[in-house]
Length: 64
Image 1 (cartoon, helix red, strand yellow):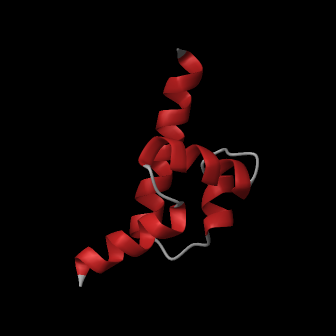
Image 2 (image 1 turned 180 degrees about the vertical axis):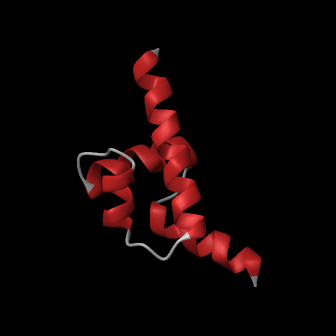
């Protein structure tokens, strides 16, 4: 559905920002159009199987 597609786009943008910036997760949630950090965390976890912070940590560990 359209809602699911919008959600995917927001999560993909969040993934890019988590991997490519040092911005706080709260700021990233706002930039991606989520109503709150908590909501982004829930949606992100549903889509990726991990929290935004865990995703960032995993991505950074791969770069080292």
